[in-house]
Image (tube, rainbow, N blue to C red; front, top):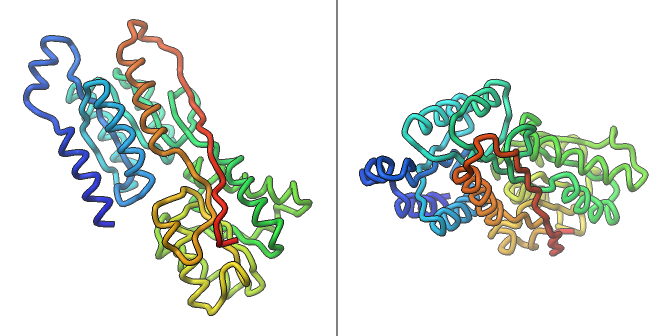
Length: 301
């Protein structure tokens, strides 16, 4: 949304790169800047992570340069290389897909890199407990509904795509249901796609009485589609999301979801990166931090 773009623009403006960087680099060997690479900026979760990063960097007297890939994998590689050439002290990468080329680029990078939102072997990271959080919210749904479907995302995304789907399947198994019979649809990360996939789901499987969504944004689109089909939430069809975004409390009914600690994710990523930057040992061990979560029960189930 425009509000999210404006929020991130202000954060970037306050942390802008200046010519004084060169003087500081010559004096200390450090530029006092890190690169932050994001897949998209029109996202509530991204803006929260950015807020945590900005606060953490400010506390360490650091500023940042922002690069947005628009979900294009090639741009991640380009940004990592250009940020290293530009004298950044380190990089925070909001990860989505770990390709062999990206892994090689990170391994050969001469400055520290921390990944957020994904757990990749051999790379320092801060990530969410996607499997267990999704299992727990799916269990809430399955204890009340029987014809439950799942709208996820492309499984190239190991966390949101694969791990959250596994969480739903674990809940099915725990309830004595066959995970192989789970009806699955694939959305992208938009309200529009959530709406379209829910329309298709209700057309092909009119018996559906519960829809578990991989993200809050997808869930918002699903809720619109359910209402457009003349169904009531939660009486006819229940809906759950993941993220606990600001919009969850203004939907009608309010959305049952998982609270993930996005701001903390940004702050922890900065803490790990600062330790790597300030370490005298260039072979500092890989650090992986899994964050907690909280189930937020509201009126949509």
